[in-house]
Structures are given as C-alpha cells and as structure tokens.
Amino acid sequence: MSLKHTAPRRTRYPGPIAEARVHAHDLVERGFATDEALAEVLHRYPADLFDINLYDYDDEGQVSLRTGARGSLSGDQLLAAIQAGRLWVNLRDASAGCPELWAAAMGEFRRIQATYPGMRAVTNAGQLIISSPAAKVPYHFDAAGVVLFHLRGKKRIFVYPGDETHLPERNMEQVVARQTTEELPYTRAFEADAHVVDLEPGQALTWPLYAPHRVENLDRFCVSLSMDFQTWSSRIRNGALYTNAVIRSRGGSPRFTDGMSPPELAARWAASLALKRVGGLKSRIANFERDFEPEVGAADGAGRLRA
Image (cartoon, rainbow, N blue to C red):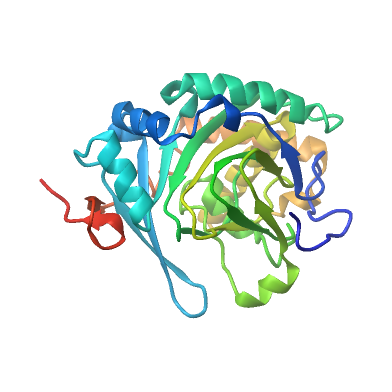
C-alpha cells in the first residue's frame, strides 16, 4: 500500500510515468518463486551473471559495499545461504537465464505499458533479484525505465523526486558513462520527500524515469524481477548524458540535458555513438574485487573466498 500521497509529477524529465504506481500481475500463481523453482534457477545460472552484494550502512545512511563470487554451492545450498543471510543477489540477463519467467513477465509488461499513453519500449532487459530478509539496497537511480515485479516476501520502496537536489546530473553522467556505480549522494533529510510503497507478491511498481529510490526487505526473504526498458526518448537522453560526461572529463562545462531542446539532445546522442566507437571513456566498474562467497551458516551468509 502507499504510505504517502505525491504531487502530480515527481520528475523534471519528460515521460509518460509521472509518479510511482502499483499494478497487479499474475506471475506468482505460475510458480516461478517457489523454493524448488529458485533452487533450480540458482543451480544452473551462469556464474558470470551473478552479482552478489553485501551492503553495510553507518548511522547517517552512508553505504559501503562488498561483492562476492558465485562459489561452488548447489542451488539448494545457495538458496539456504541467501535465506539465512544478509545478501542481495542479482541474476543478470534474465531473458536468457530464466526464459519462461521472462516470457510471462513480458506479457505482463505489455499490459502495464498499455496503461501509459505514448509509452513505447524499444528494448527490454532485466534481472532476477533474490535477497535475504534484512537486506537493503542503497539510494540510487537506474538509467532506464523500470517495472519491478514482486514475487515473494515484502519490500518497502522509497521513491524520491527527480530534481537536481535529489538527482544531480553530474552524478547521472558518471553512472551512464560507467565511471561509477548507480549510487547517488544521500542525506537523511531526503526522507521527508520520499513516496513510500510497501510491495506485496503479485504487485508490480513503476516510477518516473531516473527517479532515485532505495529498497528495504521487511524481514522476509524476497524475490523480484526487475525489468528495465528503454524508449527512444530515454536512449537519446542517455546518449546526451554520456556525451556531457566526456566533455566534462576534458575540462568542459556542458549544459544540463533538462535545458536542451530535442534537436540538441539528438545531436548529443549522435555524438555519443561516435565517442563510444573510439572509446571516449573507459569503464571504471568493469571488474570489482570479490572478497567472499556464499556459505550456509556463515555470518551474513558470506564465507571465506576459496581459490
């Protein structure tokens, strides 16, 4: 349920989704999130598509991150480590890794998309999220539209306004150009501006393009499918953000994209295609040092990394 009403529009960026909204979906009754189904998925999922994260927070809500490796546990054992620990596991490329779930979710996505006049996704991608009861994801944004299909447990999602205070474009540029991860500068004062939604199994949440958000599991093991989508408008803006990041890295001071006309945005997007071909900015987040692997019975579910 929604715990706080919002203003009519919560973002400075154009797009058909103006505020967080809950939709129903039918993926739960199809059996995709049972222990048996999840253990089978975890067992066969390619190890290079696992992101295993352990987040710690100080008293001011600032986050530190540890990343883990898949390890050699069976699917049943890995599921047990997640259920008893404090891990947040993202299984990337869900369209290939769990094709039956993905096909069903795409049908639900098309139905939800039809409720937003003018919304036309040109690409879809996503990840299956399997996370421990007390896990939390820090304040961040996604450089895409998102539909979060919740399948198991209970999550609380905090969605914040997409203005310069909560979503600085300089930080957006760094994320889009893969110079840093998706986390944004955060202060507890932002909580007064949050739209808070408690998400139950069988519900899906949409929010405005780029809207900053954070997530808390409410002391229950949780499973969700996070589906990203790009429209032509978001692809063009992301290209403009990338070009601005390159310009800024060379000492320039580009104008923010929310002040650009459509032709200027299109020109920056076209420039980004050329810049990426010549390696305009090398990714700084291609490889994280992994310092643990899941282990049943270990503190937080994180055991010693084995050679």
